[in-house]
Image 1 (cartoon, rainbow, N blue to C red):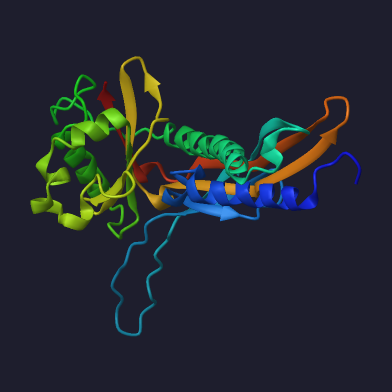
Image 2 (spheres, rainbow, N blue to C red):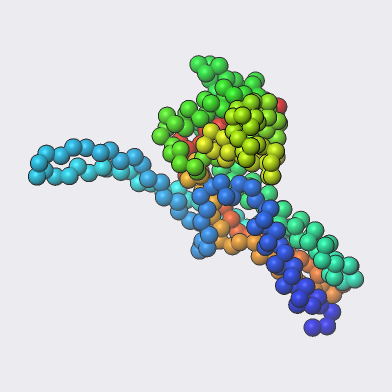
Length: 277
């Protein structure tokens, strides 16, 4: 094909973008309930209420639990991340530079995935704050505020089954590092120290993640302690890449795109921790 990039480059670039997104694109997608291969403009996440067990008399009728069922609709949104590659740019043959550009597109779409999930978390209404607890918006992320959120999840019967997550800002991560219970090997063990490997660790039965994209209002940042099933993420299209030649620009336009959405499924499974920065 005259004047077009060779197919090896196209395939390599597409593979690089997909791999980069899977490796480092989104920090929060593994922390929520995710559905792929969605058909249509929206999808439904089912929410199941509590069942009540009861006794029965000998030869009597087994009592019905009367579980309440409801559904939450998640609407999908289309997002794009494109850039130009000049025909004579070394990017078309330099594998290292190719990886840089592919990673840039993957990062952009990964940040958008996290923005969708954070927007869903922002619709939650339960907060670890109040005069009785002594925790206010004027506090940072204190030990007392974390334990209050932990307590509120327990009181709401949110399962402590290894699927709890907490996402905090980098300022709050720094504040957690001042807590011996979070950062000392004497409390958490050598393998769970927060500076080993990626900035995520297990504490209080949850996976803690540092994230720069959490919503702020003035000097207040919203952090969250939640169960994975409380937030739903849906993908009609995973990250795909299209490369087209534009003769008038003597360049290729590389477009990475995806169609995804997120929604709050169960308000009771999310506790907001508002922290002053």
